[in-house]
Image 1 (cartoon, rainbow, N blue to C red):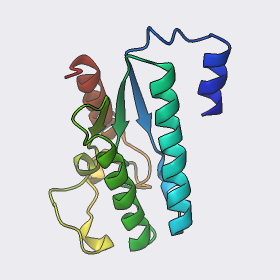
Image 2 (cartoon, rainbow, N blue to C red):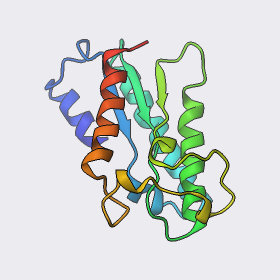
Image 3 (cartoon, one colour):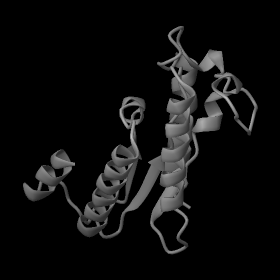
Image 4 (cartoon, one colour):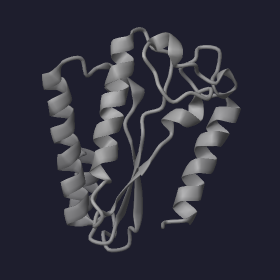
Length: 155
C-alpha cells in the first residue's frame, strides 16, 4: 500500500481520472496466513487499503479478483484460500458498494462445486505448467480474457 500512497502523495496519479482498479491477493500471501491472528491482520490491512482507495479515488470501481487454486501442500492451505475468498466476496455484497468480486477459483478447476478434501480439488492441468503453480499460456489466456471482459463491461 505504501507504493500507492507515495504515488498519490507525490501527485503522480490523477485521482479523479482513475475509474477502475483490479486487486489481486497472491497465493504466497494466502500460504503465509497460518493463524487466526494472521487472518485478522490480513483482513484489517485489506480493509485499510480499500478505505484508502475509496478516500483518494472518489469515482473508482474496485474489482477484487478471487484467489486462484494451485498445488496445495495441505488441506489447511485450501481452507485458507476458501476463507480469504469468502472474505473478499463478502466485501462486494453491499448493494451500494463500488466493490465487485471476480470469481476466478472455479475457472481453473475441473467441474466440481463441493470440496471436502484436498484430493477433491482437481486442477485443470491444461491451465497450469507442470509445477501446477504457474499458469500455462492457456491459463494466462483464461485469466486475461476474464479480466478484459470485466474491464470492458463495468456493469
